Image (cartoon, rainbow, N blue to C red; front, side, top):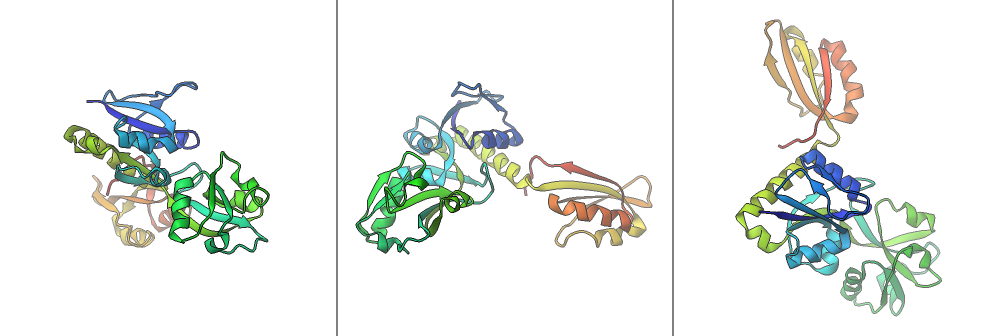
Length: 289
């Protein structure tokens, strides 16, 4: 059994490889190669533009793929959405496709674009958006640098953004959001019905999600005098239940907890002052609840 997987080439490639490495798969690729090696004989990988992955998975050329929800919607691919994987090259925020116009434009909403021109890389989603609003517009494909085309070439654009900073830099304002997109693991329907492949896909999804859950978390372990335990526990964030273990010295116990990394700089000094010692902070690769 070979599970054929497509990974996104380009801006998401490094982040995707990093996520898979934390999950347990080490993909490596040369600068000119489109076929990464991986330390799993049951997996065969191909690098593709994210925009192309959904249709190849739908066609069965590939069993599974990592791509954005926007790409699935753009080509209306009939695939199984295995799980959502919220990560990106910039932030954990959803990638938004927005309708934008110049700041001084009289256009305030989709109805104001009747008979006008809109440029975008997400043509089909944009067309369906204006059809839903019963607005007739000319939607043209943009090969990039879409934000520079208004107002001289087109009246508005539909552009993807994570932070909105590029739009602001070009004096554009957002007047509506068409779609929010995150990265998804998708599967071909026939592959999903294959018991052996489905088991492999589900295992991969579990470990990828576990790796994402672990981001921003660390483990803390410490030794605590038994008579100081309540004071130490009182320092821990609410709803955090540590694991308490006995030590050979009956006057001491060991405590271990998973906590948000951004709390540690305040928490460790408080734990120390409350009586904890031998405090160790350690990173986490995967967390499964």
